[in-house]
Length: 331
Image (cartoon, rainbow, N blue to C red; front, side, top):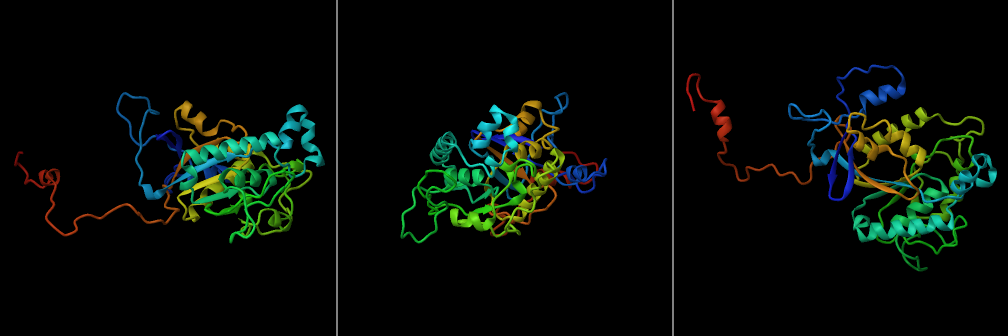
């Protein structure tokens, strides 16, 4: 796992280990951790320096930029902070954003517009729950929707007790809902989703085609997903990202999913860098990171590379010439 700074963004490389590395443990999580996305923080170092004080270099076409966002404040966050038992309440089923949460959305929307980030994003991936979809369309969507426009809205007016105007999908990246980046599954009604057929009229421009079941078959009332199971699911999600062609992706998801997924990354980095990667996210916080493919999972070709030697000509470098000198000949 290599972390460097690109402009003012906090960036992290999630670096897969070599396929020749033998796993030290036999649990599924450790197989994933050791074979697929095990963190490697150091590619080179100078003698006498700390092992964490290294730098690395990687081909651009084997990297993706991820903009990770936790949803804005939901009604469950408020109720749960006052009384943790509230998380078991059916009144918080598929929790929607609070008025304060919508203010947080507006502030992040302004930031991504002013920073130019909104123009660079190729795809928005969102967990299919009300609070994450409200956050995603509010942050990365367009302005107010007007009837008659030849594009469906990302969100219709007043969706999910929002008291908000409809949000346009014009000049926006595609939005796609993915179950792998949901919050802990089970027990807490706030983490149970509605049927997809209920969401589609509320969020017409979000693509739900990757979700196999209309109703929520993943959530169970009596078993809460373990932290290590969330982490394993998170690493599966990270690997799935390499099946996508998009290079700059926004992901709107949940605190637990982000924390347990990212906690398994960056273990060989400097502690301050590890902290940048996996510290708990605040509501509507955005962190931008670089995701690196070292195991050739992705197949994208280089776009900006140029082969050179066009037109063809002699180009023997002097250092190579030195290596070709006959034995006994000095420079």
